[in-house]
Image 1 (cartoon, rainbow, N blue to C red):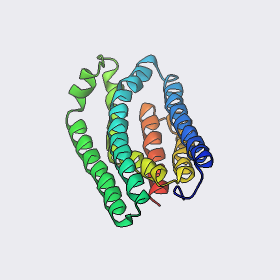
Image 2 (cartoon, rainbow, N blue to C red; image 1 turned 90 degrees about the horizontal axis):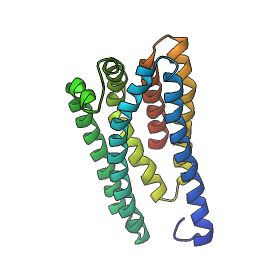
Image 3 (cartoon, one colour; image 1 turned 60 degrees about the vertical axis):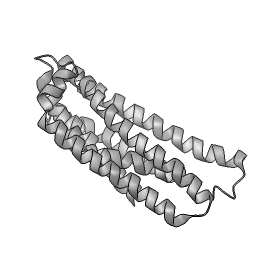
Image 4 (cartoon, rainbow, N blue to C red; image 1 turned 180 degrees about the vertical axis):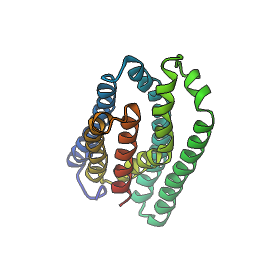
Length: 206
């Protein structure tokens, strides 16, 4: 598709869905903060503390996704589909393995981790409660970021947008439902994020 489509048509076709995906990601991060801030200021601060962990997960996922995606684009351009498949598999499974290691290490050192990131005595319990679910979802989150970039690298930016956007919308719907409806507090916000990421992952993988 990308080989045959004129560049002036291809760039908007890839750019617009990518911009929408990034906007949705930013919006549902703000949605978490908005709903959690209604619990308490300490809970809101805890989300900010764990956002550093999410940023690390995102950075590793994007590093692997953009690196493998760049290689895939060039490999597909030279019509070497078999090598492109190997690169995609390597990037994807590397993300899952690093995600599992990140999860295990993070959960085993959760208390010193949140302290290192700046949590005080009042914020630490909220940060640990929120952080444990984010860390459990780390392999799925990293896998999603890689799949997102792999799809874009193959010219399927719209499909990528559908996966990311669906997960983001479900997260925003689940936030108030779990936090207030089921009285789960800050854990509800973390579970909503994890569920949204799992749904995105499933759509992108499909």
